[in-house]
Amino acid sequence: MRATKQAQHGRPEESPELIAETAVVPTGVDARPPRPLYPAHDPGPRIVIENVQVNSFGTDATVEVRLGVGGRSAAGEASGPAVDGYLLRLCALATAAAVDQLLSGSDHPDGPVRCFVEHAAAVPFGASQVAVAVLLLSCNGWVEQLAGSAVVTGDDRLAMVRATLAAVNRRLEALLSG
Image (cartoon, rainbow, N blue to C red; front, side, top):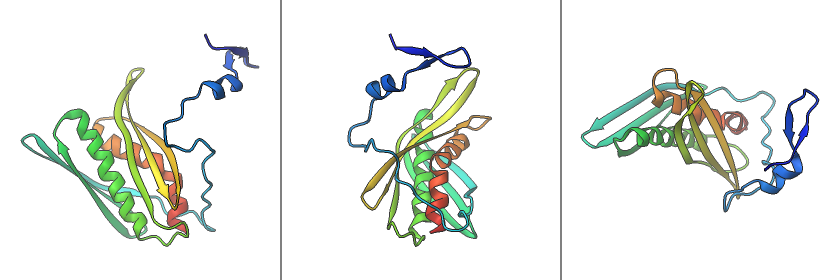
């Protein structure tokens, strides 16, 4: 049973001390606060989804995600089994590959940045389905775990691309502006 305290609004609130004691930190992930990335004078441009293409060939599938930012385009591709749950992971992997390609062209002082997909799934949340992506952003000796989500409003594959971009969105503004 978790210890709670009464919040000002009348609902129970978990004790921060208890949360800190029971928090689970994945092995190999730094538990310190995120390393700050500050954008230049103006935030970098927002990334837009130009195209998401899914091709199935029997039991194999290939996903291509094309992103655009500030007049540049980048495409990422991922291949694997054409199974519903794994297709969502392929969408996250292809999006991460496109993000890697965009970041490889940036001149950020932190050096090369890589984006890795840790988890990707669509989960029920109340009456909705939500695409959730957990990523690792690695740069110059530091690794940050990020999460993003998007409500599935039709195509769960497009929602996974949006969730993957939501996870890295603020970091990308800083990395692309440098």
